[in-house]
Amino acid sequence: MSQALGTAALAVAALLLGLAAGALPAAAASDARLELTKHQLALAVGLGLWTRALTAGFAGALVDRFGARRALRDAAAGAVAAALALGSIFLGGREGTMFVGVAILQAALCYFLAFAGPAAARINAARLEPGTRGRHAGLYGALAFPAEFVALPAGLWLGSRLPAAAFALLPAGAALLAFGAALLAPGGEAVDEPRPALAEVLSFRGRLDVLVPAALEACAGAARWGLLGWSAQFLNEVHHIRLGTPLSGAALATAAGGAAAGPLLAGFLSDKAFGGRRGPPAAVLFAALTGALLGLGRALEPGTALAFLGAACAASFGLHALLSGAAAMDAGGRRSAGAVAGLFDGVHHAAGGLSILLVGAMIDRGGWASWTRTLIPFAVAGAALSLLLRPRRPGAE
View 1: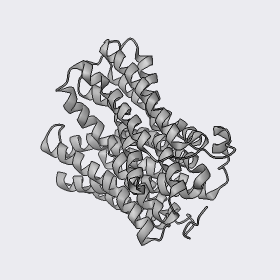
View 2 (view 1 turned 135 degrees about the horizontal axis):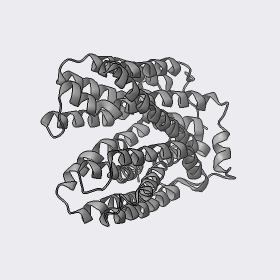
View 3 (view 1 turned 45 degrees about the vertical axis):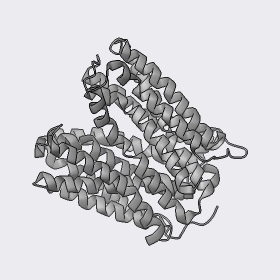
View 4 (view 1 turned 120 degrees about the vertical axis):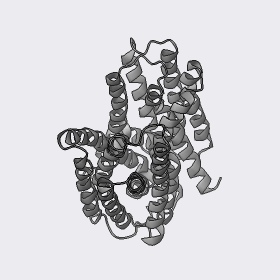
């Protein structure tokens, strides 16, 4: 299998696991006869996000300890079991009375999803030279990240056309396909003399090549999730773009297109334009994100707002691919790339969860004019911190 096809198999597994984890909000949005209140839905989805944030580092350490392909395969199998259990609750119409079980199963799906990125980083760190890692991280992100945009419209479309039984079991089908993609992925051997997961994560303290990218991931995660968490409501209330209209479809296509193009651009800039360095392209992307957020906040026409939204998605998703992919491979090397990638992914989602709450509070106090103004400082801070990344080209481990 070629290196590009191997990365594509890893990305497809991550995409399918993302679709399985996104099934619950999609089912609720499609009005698929779920007995869940909006408050219960928010709690279940929020618990899933925080589960991924808090366990990603440990998941990455397990990837290094037991082998990447084995960990990804076992995670996909666990996702199949969790999705089947969740589907059985939906089929029985017991989601209201078994809400605790629903929340736990949703958290389990997000936990299993947390293995995908570290597995890809671990495998690619072992088989790729530093000067090609950016492009492969970009390819992985371009294929895997759009799951966040595909799950909801796919759920809306399928929920209106399929019986409840089929709809409830679709997440298990997606997870089963992810299991098949994991079997096709290239191998990633376990490390020699592995450390316990907690010791592996704690071993990174004091290392600037880990702490600086982690801080950048916090800035990127805060900006990305603060953007995505409120963009649909912003377009609805400010630009009157209603769900189901042609403009809402254009908004989805623009955001998803940015999520796919941004990682590819980030990988190309890192490997080709900057010779395998990660700091300069990160600074460029953070600067682009700053400009896109400024333009989005000041846009007067829906078309202009959508253009800036696409640019902001491209920059924020490109940053996540560059940092949790290429920078994690460089910092972790062939031994610890999975643990570093998991740590970066956890920091990214933890900052995103806090950002959604912060931005919501700022919007309540200052209206939509304060939305992008709250996010811009994260982008500016990220651009400044990018200068602290070592400017030399990473060497072989």
